[in-house]
Length: 92
Image 1 (cartoon, one colour):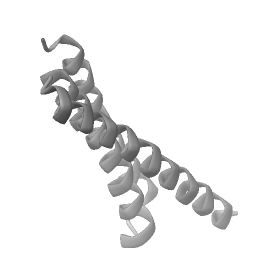
Image 2 (tube, one colour; image 1 turned 30 degrees about the horizontal axis):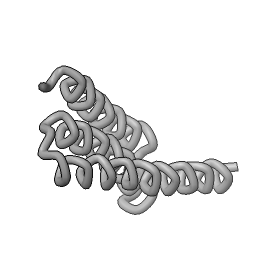
Image 3 (tube, one colour; image 1 turned 90 degrees about the horizontal axis):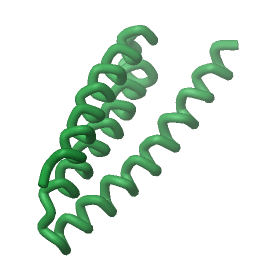
């Protein structure tokens, strides 16, 4: 049963990496075109969320730390990333 859970985690983290990476790329690309600080913050926020998912998964799957440790790292960086995204909505 653990094999199925590990496979589900790997598939989900891969999807998060691909989708979050593309959102980050397009937001930062739009920032480069417009110079709008809110787009930069948006890109950084999504980048932090994406990296958090990656680091959480790597910590659990590759380094061998417990699942709770991976979830804690992922949750912390997701909260920070969402805070940055909220900030991007208020930047002028």
